[in-house]
Length: 237
Image 1 (cartoon, rainbow, N blue to C red):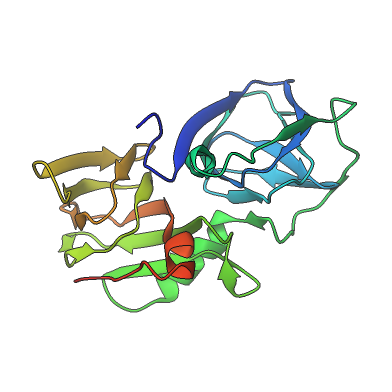
Image 2: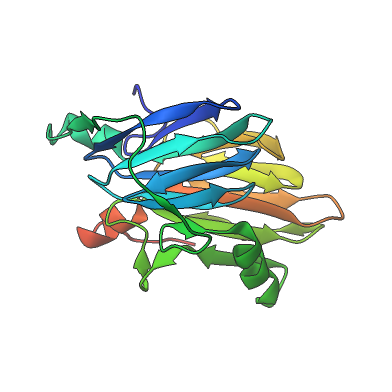
C-alpha cells in the first residue's frame, strides 16, 4: 500500500519562519497534530494559532492556508483520508487567487483543539489509563476519520484490545512500547518516545506498556467513524 494504512495517509510538514503555504481547498479531510514550534492555520477566515500538542482540523472543501510568523520552524503531523479516493475518484483541489485567504485571528474556534484542554480532561478521568475522544458538536471530527488522546500512567500496562479500525499513533510525551499483533504476520513491538509516530493495521491486537515512572501521552487518528457508519465495527477485547 502506498499509504500509511489502507484508509489513512500520514505525513510530516514543516513551515519555516516567514513562510506561507498558499491558500487552497480540497475534497480530502485533513487533521493536524502540532509536534513542535508555533505557527498559524487559517480556515474560512478564522486564523488559529498552532502550538505544540494542538489538533487543528480542515474540513472538506474549506479554504485554508498555513504560515509561520515566529523565529523557529513549526512542524506537524498531517492525517488525511486520501487513500479512500482510490475507490471513489472524486478528489479535487483548487488554489485561491491570492496567497492568503482573508482571515481574522481567533484563539477559540470549533476547528482548534488546544492540548491544555485535552490534557486536563485526561487528568480528570479516574484510573491509570484514560482515553479522550476529540469531538465536534458531540460527533467525531469527521464522518471518516476520528481522533483520540490516551493517558498511560507510569508502570502500567493496558489491556489488550482488538477492533477493525486502523490507527496512526503519535507520542506527545513520555516513553514506552506498544505490542501490535496484526491478523497476518509476526507480532511487532514498537518502542516509542516523544515525537515518534507509528501505524497499526486494521484488526490488530494492541497493547501499550509504560515501564517508566512518568505519565505518557499518545494521540491517535483512526478510521473508526467510517467503519461505524457502515456497520463494520466489532470490537474484541
